[in-house]
Each structure stands twice: as C-alpha cells, then as structure tokens.
Image (cartoon, rainbow, N blue to C red; front, top):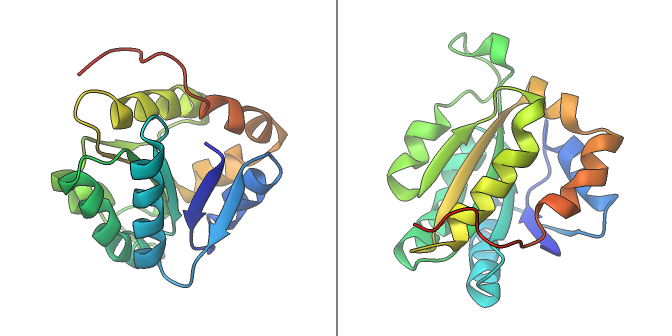
Length: 173
C-alpha cells in the first residue's frame, strides 16, 4: 500500500500523522463519501492491494458507506479504518458514538473492533488477506480512540508500512 485516503479529524489525526511519517502517502478529502469512492477505486485498480480508507467515527462512518458499499457490490478489496469513542465512554453518549460494526456489517466481509494495541499488526494482516482473497471485498476495523492514541507512536510508525505490504495469503476463502 502506497496511498491512504480519508478525512482528517479527531482522533484519527494521530494515525494520519503516523502514516505521513512512513512512505505511505495520505490523500485528504473534504468528505468521507468522496474519500470512500477514491479508496474503493484504488483497491479496484490495484487488485492485490486493498484500498485504504481512514475516517472519523459516527457520521464519518455513515458518510463513507457509499464507497464501502460500492466495494461490496463490485468485489473490490478495501479496508476502512475508523475511530470510535474511547472504550470507557461506550454506551454513555461518547463523542460521535455509533455502533459502527452494526452499521457496516451487512456490507462487509468482516468487521473488527480492536481491543488491545498488541493485536493491531496481526489484525491488519488478516484484514488485508480477507479483503483480497476469495471474493474480494471490504473489511471494517473500528479502533476506539484510547487504543488508537496509544498506538500512534514510533513503534506503530515503524510497522505500519511493513504490515500493509502484500505477502502470500494466510488462508483462502
């Protein structure tokens, strides 16, 4: 993966900064809908590499459903990474809180919520393999703000480009 698409906002700003410290280019858009179509087309044109979409939580996820659904319908490999409210604010009306997994599940090959910083690298690899193997399609990853902000350090920067580099699939679907 050499390019990510998305909209910069709290709390994904830290992730975008980490991406920009690698050799991955981030292309910012004014809204998630156009970013989702761009990421979807990137996945379509590259085939073996999924398009990568980064959005804020809540309304950002809903706005990105256009391109995400396009990827589902047209068998396009795409990984959408969104941030949600901190884990200790879930179900308490946290900032832009939305049950994003339920919102995107019907249009995704898989949906994941990160529960610990230690499983992010393996989750990204599995997501890449799922998005590109068998019937290609979109995969959704929800990263709560407290976990996201805990990962955007030098360690994450060092592994981000390596994690998204294609390797033979872990399994076939």
